[in-house]
Image 1 (spheres, rainbow, N blue to C red):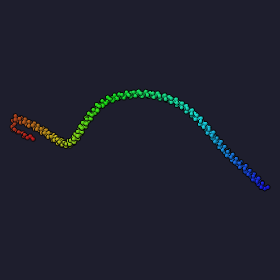
Image 2 (image 1 turned 120 degrees about the horizontal axis):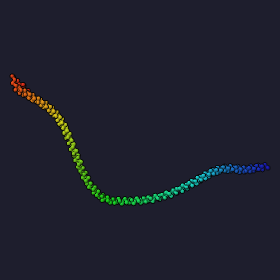
Image 3 (image 1 turned 120 degrees about the vertical axis):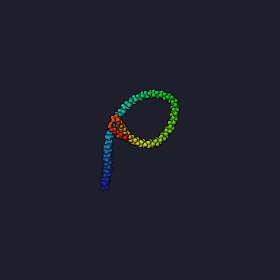
Image 4 (image 1 turned 180 degrees about the horizontal axis):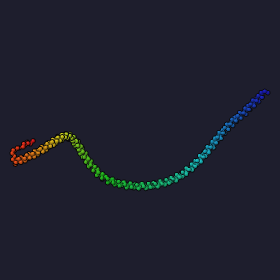
Length: 233
């Protein structure tokens, strides 16, 4: 009878283990499910917040879309106005271009006519230029000859300058001799004048002597005395 209790205990233990193990596993699974549920709740909260933000963004996008559509309508209206203005400007430009083309064609015709007239004048001008070229060639030859003559004249002038310098030196000497001669002439003239003055005085003295002689001859003196006569120097 003893093995039966042991078997019963063993069976009871096995049954207990078999009961405990699923419970433990169930408890662990429950904790895992609770943890996952918590994570899911957090994700759900985050998803709701993201959804709210997405809804706000969608609303903002709708407002932006409405504003963009309004601006698009304004731009379309402005584009229509600009298209009309552009069309009008193009028409005006075409008319102005046509007028300018007509005026330019008229100017071209006038210039062509003037060019035809200028061709005849050009031929005359070319002939005139040929004549001028010949004259220039002749003048150039004359200029070369003149340059040669000028060089020869400059060489001759150098020689003449040397001779002129020599003549100037001689002239200076001659002027100095003339000045000296003039000085001597002045001295001689002064001496001649003094001699003339002395001769005049002597003549006057002789005349006075002659007069006195005549007076003496007219009145007989007891004794005739003749004054000594000075010989002229």
